[in-house]
Length: 248
Length: 268
Image (cartoon, rainbow over all chains, first blue to last red; front, side):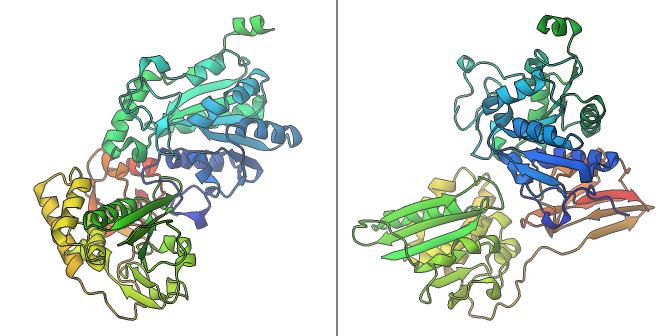
C-alpha cells in the first residue's frame, strides 16, 4: 500500500493551490498524518484564516470553516462551545495570528478555551507579495522594507512567549520548525491531545519557509529558516505556577 | 487601434512580456496602454494583461473585444472568454492546450507550440521570450528595437552569456515561426499521467509527475544525493526528480519534506 499522502487529504484537489515548495503544505502533511493516527478525521473541524492559509480550504477531507481575517480562533471557540465533542483546529498565518488577530488568541489563551491554534510563521504577508509582518527579523529585506527592516520597527514579535504570559498552566504552548518534521508532528499530537483529554488551550507556532516571496531556492530557503530558528528559540513553553497565582 | 490580451498563469512571465511588448510599442513610436490584472501572487492563478496600441491618442483604454488574444495556459482560459469575438485572432500554446478547450466563440485560432519549441530547442524558460518574438512581429516592431527593450527589462535575469544567446535565438525563432493552421485535437506536451515507479535493490520508489511542482526540496534534503532533477516534466512544466535506488538508504526524508505528496520510497 502506497503512503504518498495522508488519508485525511482530499485526493481530488491535488495538486493543491500552494506554491512550489510552500511550507504550509509540509505543515498540513504532518497535521494530516497526526489526524490519521488519532483517527479523528470524522470529528474534526478545521478553521482557516485569510492569507495563504485560506488556500487550504479544500485541502482536507474534513469539515472546514473559512473565517474573517484574524478571527479564526474566536470562531472556533464559539464552535467548540456549541459542539464540545468536536476537535477544533484554528489554522492561520503569522499576519492573521499576531497582527490583526492577536487579541483574539490572547483572550482565548487567557480564558483557557479548549481549542488548538496552529500558526505558520513565514515572517511575511505572502499572499499579497511579501510585505513586512510583525515577525520579520530586523534587517530583513521585504517588499515594504527595501533597505532592510529598521530597528525602529521593533524586533520580531515572539508570539508563544507573549501568550505564555497570560495562559493557564494547563495550556500547551510550543514552537517548532518544519526543518524537523518528526518533532513538529509530535507537537501537533500533544496539542490535539491537550484539547481532547485535558480540555485546555494549546498553541503551536511553526517556523516555515516561503520560497516565492523570499526569492530563494530549496537550499537557500532552509538556510534562511536556520537563521529564523536561531532568532526564535524552539521549545515547549511552560506556564509557571507563580504566574497563575498572580493572575488569580 | 490594436487591442491585445495576454493570459496565462502567475509565474509564467505574462506581465514581463506584456511590459516588454508595451515598451517596445512605445519605442516604435506608438501610443500604448498596459493594464495588468492578477490576483494572489502565486503559481496557478490566472494572470491577465490588457494592452492597447494605437498610432493616435488613446483617450480611454476601454477594453470590450480584443483583436488578439494570447492564451498560454489552459487554467487561464476562463479569465478571457468575455473578450473573444468571432473576429478575434486567438493565439494559443498548442503544445499544452487542445483546440476543444478554447471557448466556442473563438473561430480564428492559431497555434504556436511554444513550450515544446522552448524545451526542445532552447532553455525551458525561454518560452515567453519566444511568444514575445511572435507578438512583436505581429505589431511590426523591428527586431533590434524589441531586443533592446528585452535586454533592458530582463538583462539582469540572463546570468550567463549562454542563456542570453539562447534567449536571443528563441526570440528570433519566435519572430520567424509560422503559426500552425492545424486541427490541434491533442496537446503534444502535457505532464505524464500516473506514477513513475522505480524498482531494484529490494527497494521501490514512486514519483507522481501530475502532483510534483519541481520545488527541489527532496533533492536538497536527500542525505546521500540519490535524487537529482531529471528530464521529465511535472504539473507546472518544471523538471521533476529521478531517483537512484542503488544509493537510496530508505531514510524517507523526501517523503517527510515533500509538500505535494508526490514521492515515496519503501522496501519492496
